Length: 76
Image (cartoon, rainbow, N blue to C red; front, top):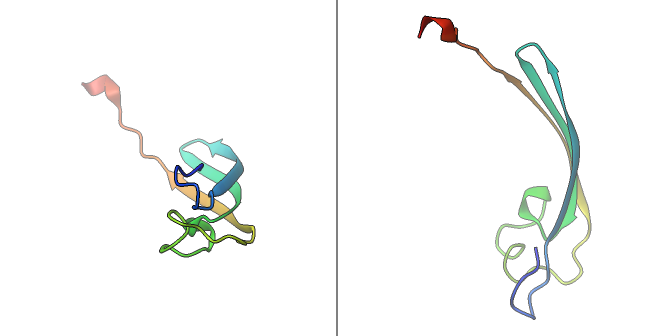
């Protein structure tokens, strides 16, 4: 995220992942890496505003399972 204020440090995030399905079960697997990004381990006070000048890369590995209940549309 390129910040408009010149004195602010930009925030970066890269997400690489896949979706695996098996019937109604959906599994999202992804790896997130970045810096000056609160959701990756930074702080919610400075990351999306002024940023931290020497912020280190931080990462998170995420797995999300979801089961989707389908309805029978024929009865409508």
